[in-house]
Amino acid sequence: MGLLDFIFGKPTKLENEFFGVMLFQKNKKVPLESYFECRRLFIPSKKIIEIIINGDLSGPTRKQINFFKSIENNYATIIESIMPLIENEFSNWQEDFKITNFQKEFEPICLNIPNCENEPITWEIAFESEHDLNHTFTLTMRNLEAIDILIDG
Image (cartoon, rainbow, N blue to C red; front, side, top):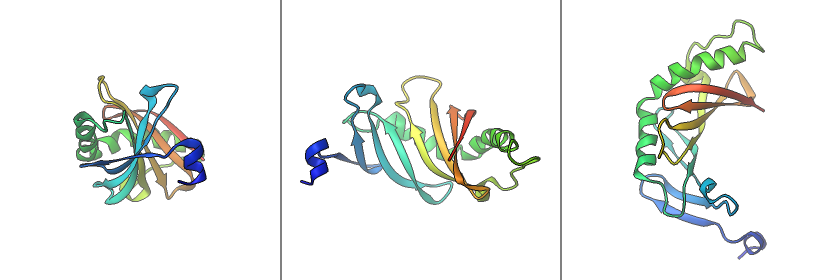
C-alpha cells in the first residue's frame, strides 16, 4: 500500500463485461454524484476515449450500456446537431469559420454518461480539434440534440 492509498484509501476497481476495467470515484458528500472512469474503443472514431459513468458500486446499468451503444449508432445525427453550435461559437474567434469534414477536424476524447433513469437524457461529449489544439470543445446534449457548448483551455 502506497502513501496515497494510506491517506485517501485504495481505489476501487470493477471489471465490467462491456466497459472493461473501471475505477470507482466515490463522492462521500453526495453519493449520487459518484462515478466510474474507464477507457474504451469508440467505434465511430476507431480510437480509445475516456468515459465517465455516473453510478454506484454495482456498476453501469443496462440502460447506460445501451445508451453508449446508441451514441455510437447515432453518431452521424449527433454530429449534425453539434456542428452549428461549434461553428457559431468558433466564429467569435475566426470569422466565417466552417467545418468541412467533422470526423477529420474533431476527435472525440471523452463521454460523460449520466444514470439514464430520466428522460430526456442530458449528457456530455468532449472533442479536441486540429483548429485549436489548446482548447477542448465540450457539448452538452439532450438525447441526440446539442443544447450548449463550452470551449475550455
